[in-house]
Length: 53
View 1: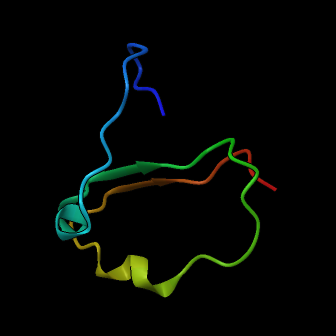
View 2: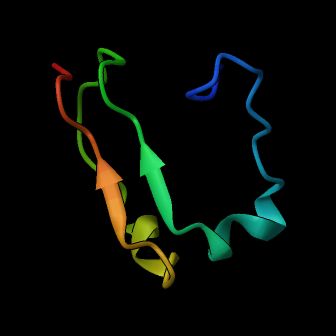
């Protein structure tokens, strides 16, 4: 996984997921239902699933 500058991204540990503010899962060929568990991410303001299946 690469960040916008081309460097390696660090994925936060599960303990820190509740603090996530933005998640971009675009263009990953994802298919299926979105988990209701995402509702527990109370700081999440952007969730991008564009350009998937």
